Amino acid sequence: MEEARQNLHLQNRATLSITAVTEIISFQEEAMELDTALGRVQITGSGLHVEKVSLESGDILITGRIDSIYYPASEENRKKGLFSRLWG
Image (tube, rainbow, N blue to C red; front, side):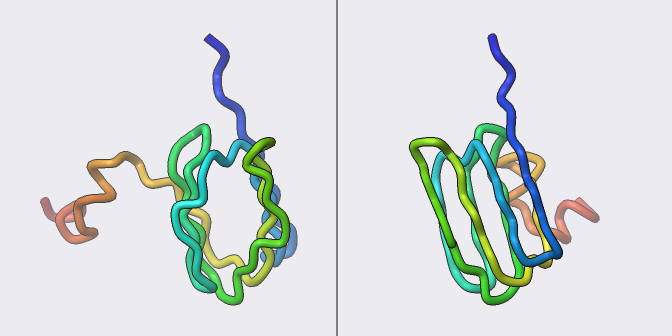
């Protein structure tokens, strides 16, 4: 079985290109959530804008100020709050 591959390219915290995107879960100017071949990705920042998207090829180009790119560890950890993960 072939292993899933994904590329992320962040340029100057202003342009983010991601491959292997399968679905846009949510989008706001301050936060985005995407499903990818390697799992869910959460992106935060300000003035986020989708410049280009092709779900057929799985490519997306996001512009704005990128503050963080985060892959939650698992579905279980996303459901738990931060404090329960730290002290639970």
